[in-house]
Amino acid sequence: MAARSRRWFLGLASTIGYAIAACRSKTPPPEPSALGAPVGPYGSRSRFERAVRFFSRAAVPEETSSKTPLHETFGMLTPSSLHFERHHSGVPDLDPAAHTLTIHGLVDRPLVFSVDELKRLPSVSRLLFLECSGNGNTEWKGGAEPTVQRTHGLTSCSEWTGVPLSTLLNEARVQPAAKWILAEGGDACRLGRSVPLAKAMDDVLVAYGQNGESIRPEQGYPLRLIVPGWEGNVNVKWLRRIKLLDQPAMTRWETSKYTDLLTDGTARQFTFEMDAKSVITRPSGGDALPAPGPYEVTGLAWSGRGKITRVEISADGGRTWSDAELQLPVLPIAHTRFRWNWTWSGGEATLASRCTDETGYVQPSRQALTAVRGVNSNYHNNAIQNWKVAANGTITNGNA
Ligand code: CO
Image 1: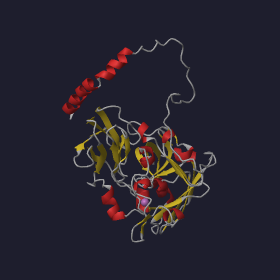
Image 2 (image 1 turned 180 degrees about the horizontal axis):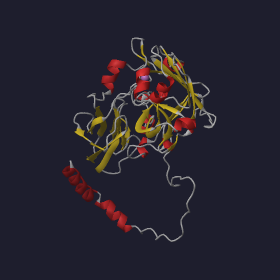
Image 3 (image 1 turned 120 degrees about the horizontal axis):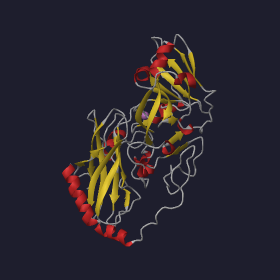
Image 4 (image 1 turned 120 degrees about the vertical axis):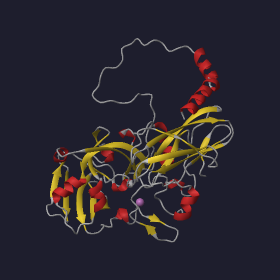
């Protein structure tokens, strides 16, 4: 791998030699002289940066989402300011001094925690991706969106910090009849989702921290349920109540929404785990390659079932594949950055990535996925994404 990289780099020096020469002919920038800005209380990015979340003009608080600019993020983490959003009645303005979490239902000892009380308990931090199960829903019927932000921007990766839910449930003394929890948010629609008790006791967090500071309001401030590897919607924001039940609550968000309609008219329900998925983020739809030559191909892979073990890249529409390098460490249930050195010969090409997770599951083609699921669902599209490179270097959605 290292030898291949070195050869590729030597090729880079010769093929973009003209670009280096062009740089030499320009006037170098002036030496810095004026004093810069002083220290400040809270950081902000350079005024020259332009990466923003995407949302349609029609977005309204009752039914809205915004998408992460995956094309313009690097490494494995998503800045909190660019984390995707999906909510159903707007972002509530909650005062942590007044907010509480109630645990009740089939417990011997109902409990109410303040946010400060939760912060006194033993905490855990984990880097985890969080993906809306509707991510990629534009692609079922083929290539409707022009950029990776618009096809795949409903996934982000953060470090989440909080208290294991099992700690709180053990304090409340769950009764033997309890088999599910209902987690309810403090937004106007009282978004609520049912989660099996086994998962709730396994690795679920009641989080108050995101990327080293308090969770952003649009991500659930002051408390969010973090359910590792499960669809974004069950990671209930603005968490205010957990009720222990002997069966699922059958809320609106697990019946009319977040169920997966199949071709025979039946629907899959409680499809929680996010299947392994990958996408090339750069170069991708909307880019224009300026000239034949070497390009780094990079993107993200993730699985709700554990670690990514392999990412393969094809530049010929899936006829041949070769292994990409994975950024270390590879963490379970986290975005995994992959990189591959490509030399574009100048002709038409189709770029695609295909990942494998530690269960041995391999990301399917769109044809293989739709053969099983049809094209009626809004959710859980984890198919391979193709980017079509034209002979003039422009890149478009290759699923069309
Ligand atoms: Co689902």
